[in-house]
Amino acid sequence: MGMPRLIAVRLACVAGISASGWACGARSAPAVPPPEPRPAPVAPQVEPEPAPIAVAVPPPAAVTPEPTVPEPAVDPPPAAAPVAADCSLVSPAGTPIRTVALSEHIDPTHAPYPRNDSERFLFRQLYDTLVRVDCDGRLQPGLASSWRLDPTGPTWVLTLDEQARFSDGSPLTTAHVLSGWGEPGRGAALRPGVRRFVRSMVAVNPRVIGITLHDPDSRASLRALANPALAIATRQSGNPWPLGTTGLRVIDHQSRVSGEINVVTIGRHAGDGRETGARRSGLVQFLVEPEADLRDRLDQTDGSNHAGRTTELPVDLLVTRDPAVLSYAATVPAFRRVPLPWLRTHVLLAPAREPPRGSGQAVIGAATRQALATDAVRGEARGARGTFWWELPADCATGVPYTRNRPVGAGVYAKRVVFPAHDPVAGGLAARLVALSAFDEADNARLMRALFPTGATGLVTVGLSHADFERALAAGLDSGYVLALDRRPFGPCQPARSLTSRATWLVRSAEALDAAVVPLVDTRTWAVIRRGRAGVEVEWDGALRLDGVR
Image (tube, rainbow, N blue to C red; front, top):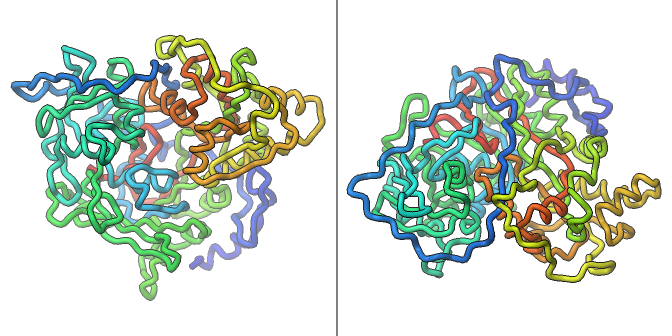
């Protein structure tokens, strides 16, 4: 396991791993500063973060008849050639990544729609979308090679790439897109996750599809098709992993006695014509170790597989927020650390906050938000800052006056602050807010009255499973909900539509959303990559894509 030269270093204990105040355990990283800005030679072209997209929300649209898309005599003209962005995580020179460590559970039944960062990383290698958005926010071809706006109506006409295939080599057609986005057993009905983006669609021929989106007819609205909720996949009988569309597939996976997956091996289908260069016949192993100390992985420097134990495989890449792992990585010469963009804002949704109470952002000042980031979050965080997409411009708002479908008053809302149990940041923030409600200081009292107008006395925190949290959020009967929202939406109006479809008590208007959504903290992760390895790109939503995933 650990190399002798590192033993002495790792016996040192840091007094407070980070400003969050976490003490280290029996094995901890040496006393080093918090993760420093990356050196210029390894800086990926993803910072500084571009200005947030101004978005707005149209009124909910009923399902409309499929658009009439004229059969083109020839394929639609290609879109303007996109400008290639340098989105490399590190300098492109180096050998390919062969082993990745993941710190969260992987469940193949979730595929292709991830529920945590580890699933997002793995699924991005397996399941593709019709278009992509690069790290600079530019639209790029995905499974579709070209697109155009139909002159007869608000419909985008996309042509699938001639080489678009499933990972078993079978060709991808527009029929697969329709079936993948459809709700099983309900004819042409779209899945709920698809209806947040797409109003209707029709296959023109096996390679051409017409898609009508909810958002305004602009090139920016087409970016919504890059959302992983619209990844294309198909399930096969007897295979827990859906068949993907990137050319890579799950070759093998190993499970613990408990049934939880601990190793996933991906590679190309035999005979896949897309094999090129160093990626030919290359396999990538994902080591799934939610309970492991990833600092052990940083000690492994040889390529041996001792006695056939997969736990001895050296790691080329890991993504983490753990301050102990990041501090320790700074002392290991074989690795470099690269910060990824600030991608998520954790917020409090407070159903009792009426619009006359003003903007949610104004409720908690910058200093208080930074204190929450320091005191309540383990890992790198900052007080939420910037212009947020829920501060809606008029062209996406409904213009409908703010109304509520239930009476508001003391006793209506349960004394619970609810959060997803799988999100430790949300749990820490919820616990901190409830703890503040127990203090009588004037500042705390004013803050609690602003956050919880019907009363903060007696609040408790409750962590719920994914399904239970979504049901509670839809009902809106709790005092508050702490959850993460993406800072970089793919489309201009989609994120607010998505949020209001989850929290159905929210009205899609600027006044309603801005009052109910209280930003708390921003978070980001870091990539720790072995020196000499390369071939990793950062995409718009911060997900990493390995070289050769096409």
